[in-house]
Structures are given as C-alpha cells and as structure tokens.
Length: 192
Ligand SMILES: CC(C)(COP(=O)(O)OP(=O)(O)OC[C@H]1O[C@@H](n2cnc3c(N)ncnc32)[C@H](O)[C@@H]1OP(=O)(O)O)[C@@H](O)C(=O)NCCC(=O)NCCS
Image 1 (cartoon, rainbow, N blue to C red):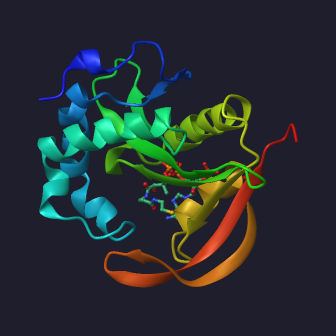
Image 2 (image 1 turned 60 degrees about the horizontal axis):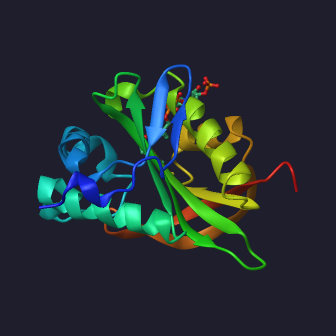
C-alpha cells in the first residue's frame, strides 16, 4: 500500500482558477481517478488508446499516480487532474508528457474532459493556466498537441488556446486500436 508520507508536501504544483483546481494527484486519491475513468469509459474510448481492464481499477491508479509523481520529480511529465473547487470530483485531465530539454525544450499535451463537464469552458480555463505554468515555471519553449481531423471539438479548443496548425501526420497515433491520421499543432512560449 502506498503511504501519504511518501510524498513531499508542497513540492507539487497546485493551480487555482476561478472554477477549478489543477494538480498532480497523490496515490491515496486513486479512487477519484478510477471513478472518472469508469464513468467516462465509453465517452473517451474513441479518442484514446485501447485500455486494458486493469486501467479501470483503483490498484492500477495507485501505482500510476505514484509513477506520475516520480515523472514530475524527474522532469519527464506533468500530469494534471482538473478538479472542481471542492476537489470532490475530476472534471478532466491534461497531461504534459515527453518533456525534452536541450535544444528542443518541448513537450506534448493530451487532454480529456468528462462527458458531463464538456461545453462549459472548463478545459479552456484549465489548459490556459497549466500552459502558463509549463511556460513560466518549467521554462519550456513549445507545447505540441495533435487531434484527429474529425475531432472538431478538440480542434476548436486548441484554436481558442492559441495553438497553430503545423502539419498533418498520417497514421500518427494508435487510437482505439487503429493508426489514425492527426493534425499537428503547437503553441510557443510568448516570452521567448
Ligand atoms: C475535446 C474536449 C476536451 C473539449 O472539451 P470542452 O472544452 O468542454 O469543449 P467545449 O464544449 O467547450 O468546446 C470547445 C469549442 O468547440 C466548439 N464545439 C463544441 N462542440 C462542437 C462540435 N460538436 N463540433 C465543432 N465544434 C464544437 C465549441 O463551440 C467551443 O468553442 P466556443 O467556446 O468558442 O464556443 C472534450 O470534448 C473531450 O474530452 N472530448 C473527448 C476526448 C478528446 O477528444 N480528447 C482530445 C483528443 S485530441
């Protein structure tokens, strides 16, 4: 069992917006994430990789959240959960992964809103703040995001957030068991 004491308090970002709290969850909060994943299983399956049955269990999320904390400490990724102000439920996630330093200073963004949380501007509110954190605190230069050409909603969200189209990649990601074309976009650190 993972103990709360494994985590150094105060060493992880907690980003508050008008309606949301975005933060990296701790392993003892696995049930919250497990509930989000079970509730949105059908809603998200056509936009995400195939998930094994274990993905919908609390024990999977206990170890996954511990990994996410390790990845943040090691500068590999920043996996944010987007919670309501009372922090009782997860409204969505935005994950900054594959952080590369050196001459690239870039990462990839993936995100998902819960079915009932869509259409209220939560994702725009969350990602505009977490992008600011990634640029200002992590000092990255470029955030990249890709969406399937038929995912108009995702394309509209990225446009609102200032992402620009950069290309079209054939069979770019394996989504729901099939290699799917994606539109590639990115946003640059405005301070650079
Ligand atoms: C993509 C997603 C995160 C967007 O969530 P959201 O911010 O709540 O999206 P919204 O409903 O506010 O829509 C964002 C924009 O798309 C527009 N939009 C909404 N539904 C749309 C539709 N069916 N077709 C085209 N545009 C649409 C809205 O007009 C909105 O722009 P506006 O605020 O200027 O009006 C969410 O739909 C989701 O999680 N989908 C499933 C998983 C997924 O697609 N992940 C991303 C993979 S790249």
